[in-house]
Amino acid sequence: MTAAEIVRATGVTKGFAAAGGRGRTEAVRGVNFTVGQGELVVLLGRSGAGKSTLLSLVGGIDSPDAGTIVVAGQDVGGLHGRSREEYLRRTVGWMFQSAGLLPLLSAQENVWLAARLLGHRDSAARKAALEALEAVGLASRAGHRAAELSGGEQLRVALARALVKTPVLLLADEPTAQLDSETGKSVLDVIRAATGSGTSILLATHDKAVVEIADRVLLMEDGRLAENAGAPTTP
View: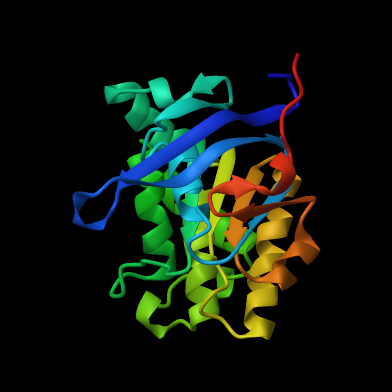
């Protein structure tokens, strides 16, 4: 892996038992790609193409059946126990199509919780949370309960929650799927801006409009990247 690469996936394969226990379904098939530091890579494909499975492998939620995934110098498939917990806590941030906020807590409190989990003291966590909300344009809504925010605002809070730990890699799974085009664009603009601090982003979507913010687009179909797009070269 070169210094400029944050992610290098080589020959990644993942399958699951088919319905009824007959055979296996290969969700990801021999995938190769890289993501550079501060790069926004869009993983584009229809529902069922294998995008979410691939994100879960890169994010350390699941392990590949074959192949390797190296993120910031760590072999993700080889992480176990505390090292895996630290990877999940500090190296990667997640953003989903559902914000998953605690509705009775304020925007700042939702982000504050994530900072506290990193070990920040209360005052430092509150300051970091407010700074993260400011970065996504929601400082003025910091005191509002999550339930009082619009769908787009909730997703921006979720992004602030992911970014408050300054992750090396942000993984976004269909972050605009439930938004209208105008709100979706505002969320994408904020995601795009996150690369300015050096965070790398891998964003999975079926929405072709999202490619406008991408540095690079990888097309995924039936578990494969089209023509092995983004394949790493041999060192």
